Length: 399
Image (cartoon, rainbow, N blue to C red):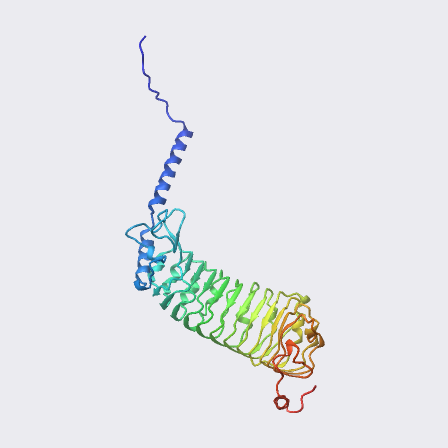
């Protein structure tokens, strides 16, 4: 019997063809992920960025030391020996989306070519030694959501072009040497949630602020003028305000503490002369902590702070307050920290503050109080000399 070999000539079914195509695409994706297909403009930007940093400031163990462009593509996977940290790429390994450097002491200036990284969402160079000005070309990063340059040595003014970054949600350039005024168009940053420009050398007035802010920190500058309601118009979500260690003057209006979401306010170490306080509507407020210490506030201690239901910390220390300590403070069980020291308060402290079971810590010292025993923690330091109090009141202070 004759043996015959037959070859099947069946065509692939559509399902089989689809599976084959998917398999080939997966192979292609795997190849691209392993080889890396970083856009040339991104590679040139990364090269320029590293080249602008002093080689002597790049430790052998650092992220930047592993950026070897001759040995590997920046987005190639896996990253075992090269580009081991400092950058994150898109899922298809073509675009750089994040630069987050380690705090290794890198020193250099920011290259304007960073603007080529048009898919960058996070730029974090904090805790290093970068210097010089912030390039205005940073405005060419349309996807940037987080810009953190804190704790470096950047100088010059904040470029107005920063306010065109419509995707920006968090901006932190604190602890640098920036100078000049805040950008007038700061409120253009409509998506900004957190702004920290503390501990620079910024001057001038507060402009209108971005209306979506949750946290505002501008402490440790030389900002001046009145704290105007117009700067805070529409900020219905603002929870934290830190404006301490500046040169703000005048009256802080009652509107400030009525900001609907306000929880913490630090305005210590300024030159405020008066504070207006109003009872919150329906006694509804999230205000927890207020620091108005080390100003020039005159008048009586504001009684209406006792109407803020969640207030637990209040500092009015080292101002020019007169009169008695409001009894309402002593009835407020939420109040845990109270600093009224360094004023010219008179009379006897509320008895609730002097008992061994008092729930309040802080200080009533360095006033003109009577009956504030040294055995009480709240009465430390001791009261002002009688002659100082007499001179302040122009007569014998009332007991």
